Length: 251
Image 1 (tube, helix red, strand yellow):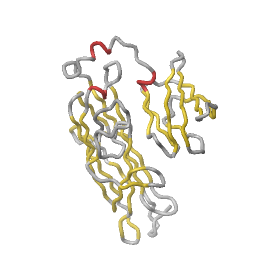
Image 2 (image 1 turned 60 degrees about the horizontal axis):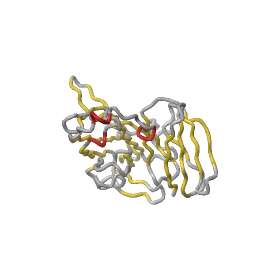
Image 3 (image 1 turned 30 degrees about the vertical axis):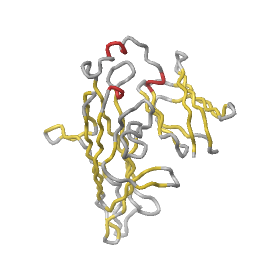
């Protein structure tokens, strides 16, 4: 929709955080395991409504972020000992069970992440982690929205991670290639996976009844749990018969 001055409302802008030189900015970077990395986040909205800037709501999420966005030991995966945090205090949306940030026209923060060997794939090779930044204004009835994906590839260091040499000879399990988050969730669950292949998806309720079954296409990065709140079990199977099982909680 248009603003009162008949100017089309444009979505907020999430600025690319990494400068590669020559005036080139990107949404991706790499870091060697064991080293820290900082990601500068900036969101801006140049639109005005009745002479005032618009209110912004920003959500930052991803499987490598702390559950509360602040505590580096409060990770989403039990095996993760140090996850990324934001150096700003978020608000909590109890209706949607999500943390978020609020600002007028402009917002900035910093993602700080001390990487370690656990941030590599199970076979010790490089792993790309994704951080999602979603921003929207408050124009009614349809706010402007945008989402950008920041990709950080953690590279191996055989000196810092000596177990890499033996891990390379171990077969990689399907569960090691898939990240499921958030958990608990409001029903919409994100799926990060390194392999670009179809998977058979099955969802079971607490009584063991199959409540959903279909193919998960390579391009799909999220699924919707059944409408009723409770505990569900997700099974993903690849074309070689390997299975990955996850226990999911819907609030």
